[in-house]
Length: 81
Image (tube, rainbow, N blue to C red):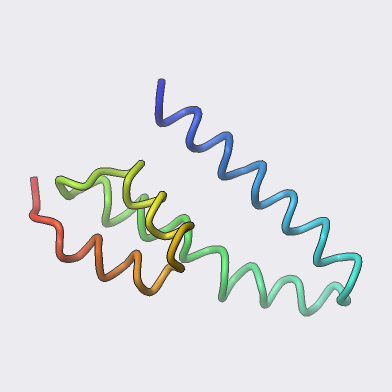
């Protein structure tokens, strides 16, 4: 149940960022922003965090709070299940 809430919050965050960026930049730049900036923000917790003790939720939390490169380091430091 907690993961569903986290995923819902994350999706709402992505939609909010997507709408805000469309007001300021063209369509091509938003695709690059999503691929480079926001896609790793989801993939790191999903692929790496779920296989480690930190889990999906905490990995997602650290990726959002500190940025995805630092969240990746925190996730990789966490011991495997």
